Amino acid sequence: MIDFYITMARTAVMEQFQYRTANYFYMIGMIAEPVIYLVVWSTVAAAQGGEVGGYTPGTFAAYYIVWTLVRNMNIVFTPYAWEWRIKDGTLSAELLRPIHPIHGDIAYFGGWKLVVIVLWLPLAALLSLLFRPTLSPTLLEIGVFAVAIWGAYLIRTAFLWALGMVSFWTTRVSALFELYFALELLLSGRLVPMSLLPPWAQRLADFLPFQWTFGFPIEALVGELPPAQLLGGLGMQLLWIAVGWALVQLVWRAGVRRYGAVGG
Amino acid sequence: MSTLDPAITVAELRKFYRVPVREGGLVASLRSLVRRRVREVRAVDGVSFTIAPGEIVGFLGPNGAGKTTTLKMLAGLLHPTSGEVRVLGHVPQRREREYLRRMTLVMGNRNQLQWDLPALDSFDLQRAIYRIPQAEFRRARDEYIELMGVGDLVSKPVRNLSLGERMKMEIIAALLHRPQVLFLDEPTIGLDVTMQRRIRGFIAEYNRRTGATVMLTSHYMADVEALCRRVIVIHHGLVLYDGPLTGLVERFAAYRQIGVTLAEPADLEPYGEVMGVDGAKVTLRVPKAEASRVTARLLAELAVEDLTIEEPPIDDVIEQVFAADADVGLEALPS
Image (tube, rainbow over all chains, first blue to last red; front, side):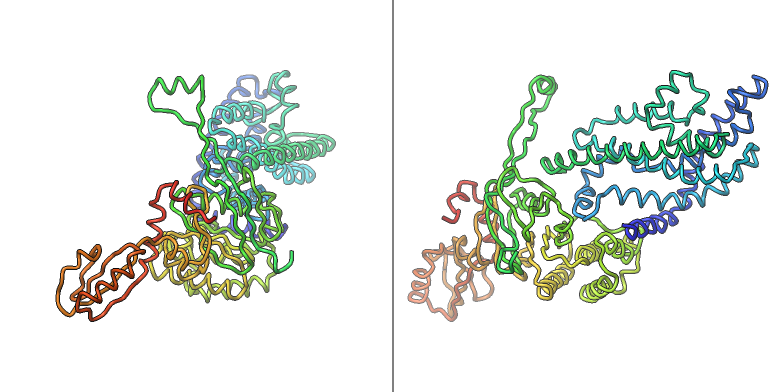
């Protein structure tokens, strides 16, 4: 299995480096979103005497610059592509292989992340020059962050896989996907840091996986979380990976049965 | 499983689909909200056959006959509605890894190659997927590359290859794990004659070297004639014929072709349907039952220099079988 992961990831690196310019433009395009959040929150912070909920313009800058990497780590096989995967025969080809197709996705997108991280570094340097982030992480925080971005990737892969597999039963799924993404945007730390959300929203978020894919990795590096919270966060990620994995297995089994009954 | 057991056993295999039906127009659309009408499509309707290890069998039938559905059930992609399937002792629909490592399904439109990379990289990915030991992998890869004659192409990105070249790579990739059973669905579709011949030669050689069992569908009779001694003809989800390729012509050809060369020109219309005239040689088509009587008459009544009786081309026979009504098919079922 390790050999498969390495070979598939290497394939992704070779392919995606061929598309480095396209990848770069995609990343640059993605920066508009956090820059808007950053400008808005920095203005609010300045208007409120230099701070909102413990965040200064400098820590907001750090939050949203790290955001750009976490956002890229969060890119996985989209649920919208499941319909195409089923219809064009890709899934049939994958089902003929003696390996679960999710491993191919994890390994391929994982390899792609390596390209993304390399391309992100100069972009982060440029953003840092422009927005002057306040960032002084400890070694432990850097270590937890390095693990947490991959944890986030696995959680999001599992949940979006489970969601995408709804396409086995119906192709009218975009409304469901939109609802999921709206909830994720609000309750993950993507739109605003989790601590700025109203208490009821924070309580709701505690029952959902979203904050462990966005807010937690960022705050692990940017925030002042004590070691217990950092390690506890990794534990929560593990828990959500397990929940997501179980969900994938459950839906997959039923989905493949359905596929076997009605075909592509 | 002993070597004497069949490689493939199919008994009373059926696959029915329920498809929604609705007439066009707004009213029909509204009505379908309240009452959904479905129709049952019998894609495969009681198919039985066995195939011995090492056999190459042609699986013939017009579009929609149930060929691909059957192959998909044999490969484990589709679950039968009823009936039994066993391949190499496995029940395909269980999709056991051990089974998936022993078989391959190649479909004319299947794409398992990485588009932007040379085929060599896709081959390496197959090695990792099927956990093929390095030495074994290199041996198989190099052997196939030589057999297919694609040594100068494997380092080019797949996107720069022609359709035929890509198909060769697809077949190489599909056989690297040396499967014991091959399901080939239209492997030469859309390819020129030279490419078709090369792929046919490759399949025959693979079968000879490994003793693998092959089931092949193709619309090109040249593929079938070159590779298969036995054919199974399926139509409307039923087996119409299962036997030697030569027997298919014997059984279904309703006509014989008589080629006759005359010393002096004569009107041959009274003897049969004139199919063509090539100089002094005339080709007649006569009902099978009358062939010997017409031949005797020709020899007795005209100055015949040369005379041949031929089976019609297999393409024509197949076309004739498929053009027949479903009821004709039922009558033609082997008893």
